[in-house]
Image 1 (cartoon, rainbow, N blue to C red):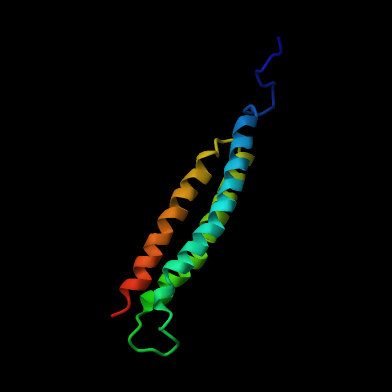
Image 2 (image 1 turned 90 degrees about the horizontal axis):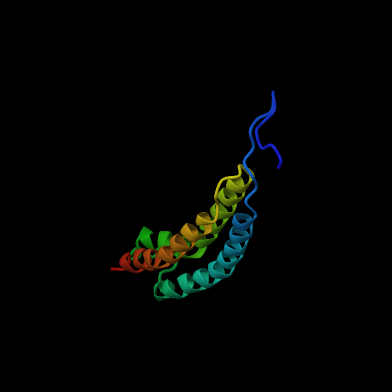
Length: 122
């Protein structure tokens, strides 16, 4: 039976959790499929504001913010999830929950972006 205790001068190490690594990788791939769908849906939800061109005084700042959030927000959540997930895996901490939370944030970003862009039109 191997001795798992650290020797003198060695730091104790945590065992590598391979199931967490596989789960995190698969969930990040699933999130990579969800993000373009959310971006497409976000763009479609913000299209009723197409008549707002540059310099239109009747269109508020919320149109630009909502459209930008619906278009680029899901990519930001995916990038943040990938970064935090990889960092947690490198530090040997559980990371499978990170893409799940990011998926919820991606799905929640779309209606918020649509509400922002549509509420800015008088």
